[in-house]
Image (cartoon, rainbow over all chains, first blue to last red; front, side, top):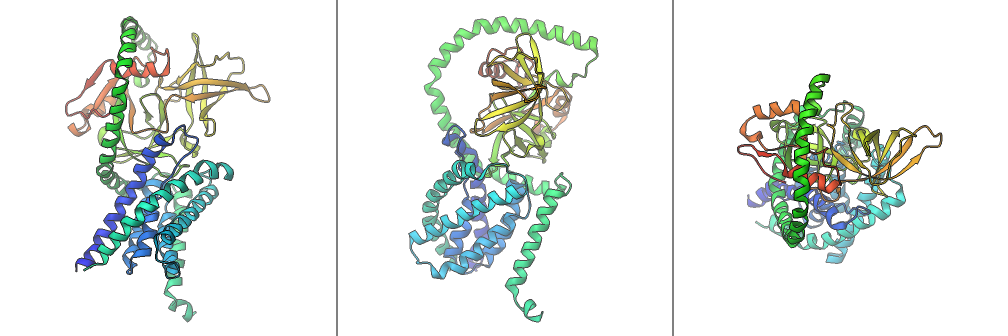
Length: 174
Length: 330
């Protein structure tokens, strides 16, 4: 019962914190980065989904949360419905497909998280470019957004790996 | 066919793709206004976001206070020097205000762009996506906020309200690549003349706003102050936009393009001011106690235009009236 409660109620609440963390980071980070030539976009929620998918056995609550959080993310941040609604559950599914082929150590988890995050950034660039929201050239996107964001998310992933591994163990414990 | 329907994963994947594409099409090609139930969802999300982001905001405020404390002595000295000139300006302002009201009365002008009230607000979150660049702020229709109201930081115009919920609103920044809300009627103060133009683009690489539709004969000096001019009735007049960096004439010699360094720092926006016009002021006063917030008469904004920072400091320290139960953020 406790396990059911943790995976069905507390897991979505934890993900909600990561959801807001993205907005908070977006408010705070530009001030730290400096003159506006670079921008670090965090992807805390995406990383949380990937790391929970790597560590949890029962993925159904994660898929459900993926759809709900994706819808909320689109509504609250992106304003174009349907992007994250699909991408979050897809990230969980892809991670689930490959997780048994990955070594179970910190570096493999980190590399996988950063790899998916990099794919996510690229995909977002092309989606927004296709939808006519973004007019930046690919070169300026790489230099000004992609690489700084990857550095930030790579750093955050190290913290999240440790944190979410412990949280996953706690969620799956009776 | 039977084999297809037995493959549940494929069906879920297909349904997800179809749903996503339909929602995307709805968002892009559908009616631009957000349906009411979705605004409620946004509002509830913003309420939770306010609680979650408050520790981070408190921490940042504390950090800023420590930094500001270091500069207090120097600031105090420079402010003392400014006091004399400000008193003189205040007297002049008073005179000009009376004169302005008389002239407006004579011309029978709409008073909406004359008096301004501002509501201070805290940023709950910023879109993590570079290209959209939107803010969610903690004031909404309960506080008298309406769509298309101008939003300022403490040093200049930053954008416009584009979605209003009961307790939260969304602001599209001037730096957003989505240019549907960008056009702002601007006035370049060149000596005694005001030269009109329209802020039509933002150059991200140079961090400069681009003003088009400026007369080719206009003589514009570098560092001239650019403010909103109130034409079109969307943005009130006198809000600082920035300072002129350079000018260039287009290929056909028909108009000038003016590049402006924004007065606002778009990298660090945590507290903002929503500018209400005089017409909205009464409505705000009629609202519940929850909506009564710090209101500042900014009539003096356009008068003291020595430089961007000074102008804003003057604005924030003159004629401040705090309503009962007011939140004095920012």
